[in-house]
Length: 233
Image (tube, rainbow, N blue to C red; front, side, top):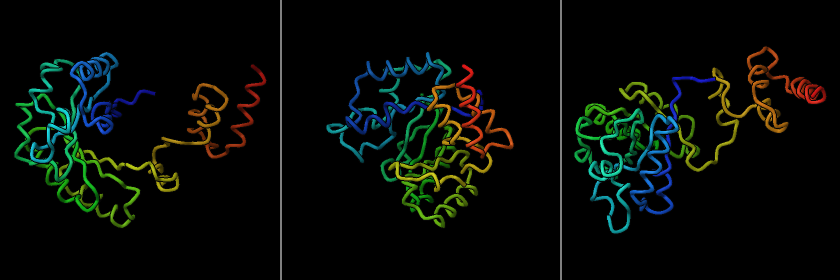
């Protein structure tokens, strides 16, 4: 089902730059941008917003800095429905190096921080809000965070003006039991009925219907139903 409140972000250039120090050619970034526009992607994260004092341009490419002159060279004024995003790491961006949103082609800034930096993350995020940007906070390496510290971070963000908050398993180290309680209201992510339809090479509509029924946790009954369906086919 289409849920308009869920937005899709492409991070090819920003995240992919970890592999080549953000030394992508203009043609490559332009091709990703055009593909995102044609695909109807909501946001494209075009790189990091960093200060020149934090990195050397001899070592990293322009997409580590996301200067407007570099972005405009590739996307012009971006007169499309696609919004452009950049990530700002705490400690690697001077707030004074962030221009007002009205002077930038960037629409969203995503502030990345660790749990011990949450106060600085909130301060930078609210600074960006005041400059007119859409803003969110990415709490990184959450698999290293104990539950008490995570609860405190969530409380701090809830008291702030930050409207969007990401909890990021940066290392891919979390187990399902760590997040199953992030599933009490919305049944997204991994569930056995979806695994069953996938294993049987069937459309997940049967699993979606089953998950909305009172029998959603009776996986054996669902497997039997799908098995009988396979026999009928």
